[in-house]
Image 1 (cartoon, helix red, strand yellow):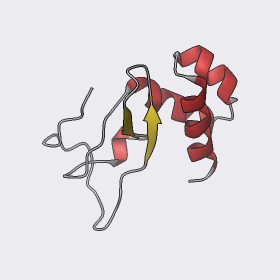
Image 2 (image 1 turned 30 degrees about the vertical axis):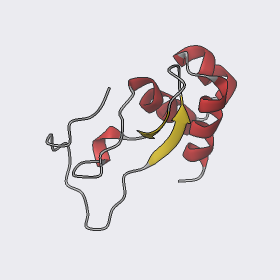
Image 3 (image 1 turned 45 degrees about the vertical axis):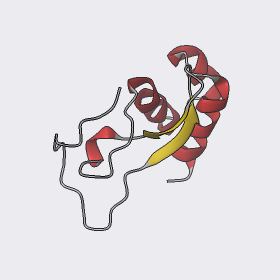
Image 4 (image 1 turned 90 degrees about the vertical axis):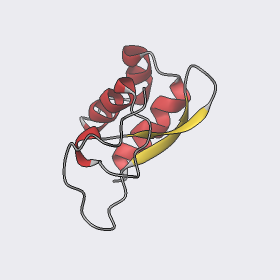
Length: 89
């Protein structure tokens, strides 16, 4: 579901780029998905998918990508990319 860019959730620092990862999910279309909804606003909005956000939180807590894929229903390759992004902020 796209995040409306008009909604301000937090103040962005000048020059700040929203953390995102490029993934292909169930529909087969590659998109840039937000990793953390709460630190991103403004004209650089990406696609928000609650499962991607949840997977990122779980990866930051140390859960393995295989378990994350099973728990969230995300494709295994997407879970690996999210876990890699969480490991290298």
